[in-house]
Image (tube, rainbow, N blue to C red):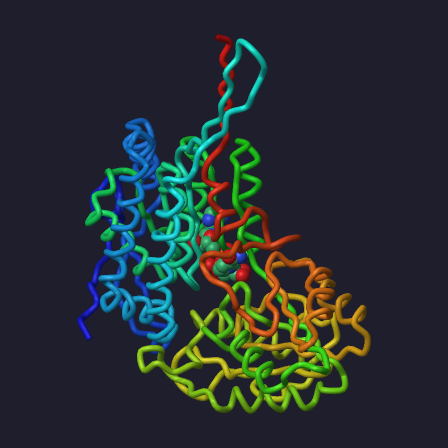
Length: 479
Ligand code: NAD
């Protein structure tokens, strides 16, 4: 495997540059604790330069005035360049955030797909003509917001950056990405691909910095017209306050505490497999992870046994060796997860498996299943962002729905049943932006993604997302 580049710069105005302060941030591998590389640590001055470059790009109208077919080709060329670098990108992603190589390769593929998908829309977005009677011509245009500031989390850094960047460019916006301080490296390949494809300079700028420094500087910047935030609710609320001060439109993709409801008629083997993947993939560090399972009392014990069996069948180890159970992002996160597990035990829940860190070096947490959980426990209410499943029994469907909906989050939810009528009935009553039936994580880049309640608003992915990156201008003409 090729050695990983030891220092990664910011990408501003089509150039790779050091931080103005010359500061660097070390990035470490959660599987080993070893330093992977350093990244230029951007601060407010670097953010200013990035926003200024993006403003110049918008003023140049280079993307806006481009023939739509050329904009499509540009995005398709970026997609091809990303796909062509998969062998280079995947090991970097695995080293910086721990996920296994297969998942990293999937993430690269999904990143390329976002560019292809929005390339396919870039020449199909048009306004309409509205009759106003004799003597008038009226039409609408879909115009870019201008400079889009995009704040990205560490768990799926490349894919999440791409899902906002691709429609933003498709809509002719210029973008400043604030990459996550824990895993900023793979995002740099977006700039490499954009350079190869000939994206006009200034349309993509990438800075890595701390949230309270570069992040605040970016979201509060007077040159920013639009914000896309993906991350925790607490950070999202801070950003919304900033956005409100300047009335900046924002797309908010935040956390979840997503519940699956399992009816007694469900295929228990398939459900156990799906439920295990839903919470143990990428060590549960997935916004739409299935972290709660609400199971009909008649099959509760049987299903818990089967999920535990599936979990025991997974191997644990570094992502580079392609194990399924990979580390959590940091020691701090590991301690937080263990703290939640202790609170569960103190509150009377039982860890059927796991409940503590794994007995090995690196930030590994044992896959954990809690039974005897009640909805008021912290482990049932708060997003743990680790491989910890809270299982609760139910007797009547309304009770299951009340538990599932009884949280402030509303990102994903699931239903497991063989009865299609019951599946529809339940899906229609779940307070979530995404509902999976009989397979957690079913879907793709084509389907809209986002939350209700405190999980956020606006939608990413699918046709719906494009609407977040352009606004309507009406032009009424008196002839
Ligand atoms: P986080 O909120 O700590 O950080 C997210 C990003 O915000 C990082 O880039 C961080 O530097 C930046 N940030 C932090 N403080 C900031 C500030 N004051 N101003 C501007 N930017 C700031 O979240 P995280 O730990 O990186 O990611 C995990 C969270 O993200 C979980 O809650 C997860 O559910 C959520 N998430 C949501 C989705 C989704 O699509 N809904 C996807 C992935 C992750």
